[in-house]
Image (cartoon, rainbow, N blue to C red; front, side, top):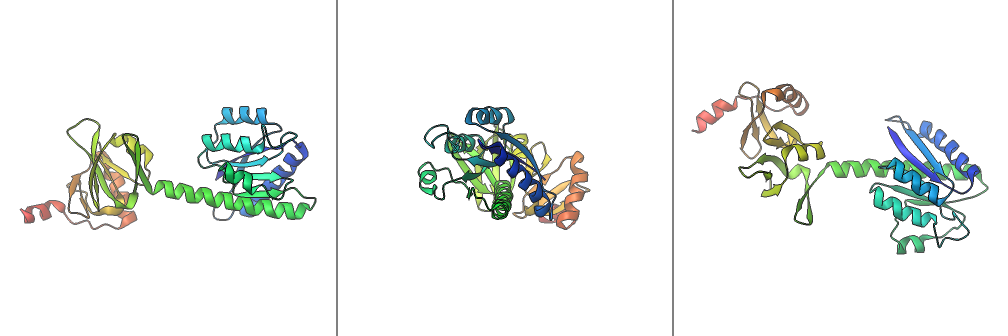
Length: 269
C-alpha cells in the first residue's frame, strides 16, 4: 500500500537523510503488504503550506521540524501541524526537533503528535527510532480505517450520530423522498439521505436493490430463485436481478443457508 509522506525541515541534508531512512523502512516494514511511500518535502513554512494546499493529502505521515525559523513562536512546525490537522483528519504527525521536551506546548495546542524524534549525531539510533515511529503511524492508519469502516454516521439537524455497523440489519427507502428507515438489532430510526449516498460512504454494507442497503453479516439466508433475502429479524427483502452474481458471492463468503424463502412464507400464511 502507498502512503503519502511529507517532510518539512529547514535543513535539506536532514530531509535527504529522512528520505533515505524511509526507503529502508519500505523494505523493513513490507510484510503482509508491500509498503511504499510517496514523499514530498519543503524547507520552509510557506512552501509547506502551498504544497499541502496543492496536494490535499489524506491519511498522510508528516515529519515536521519544529524550528523552521529562529524561534517556535511564529510559522513553526506547531503552526504547520495545526493546519494539517484541519485538512487531514487521519494525519500522523511526527515532530523532529533539537529539543528533548516540547510536550507541554503540543498539549496546550492539542496537536497530538504520535512521537517526537530528537535530532542526534547517532545516525543508527535516529534510524531505529524513525522506523519504529513509522510502523506506529501505519498501524494507527489501519486502525483508523477499520474503525471508520465499522461506524455508520448520519446527521440529524446539526448533530452527527454514530452507529456500530454490526447493529444495522438494513436500510430501506420510505414513501417520503430522501427519508430512509434504518432497521437495527436494537430498534428502528429514520434518517435523511439516499441509498446511493450511504452505499458510497459505507463499504461494509451491500446495495441489494435501489431501495435496500443491507448488512451482509445480518442476512440469515438467500433464495436465488425467488431473489429474496431473509434477515436475522425475520424481515424479507427482494433483491435486484442485477445483484444475483453478488448474492452468489455473498453465499460463498458467508455460507448462508439457501432454503427457499417463498415456501417458508407460504407455510407461515
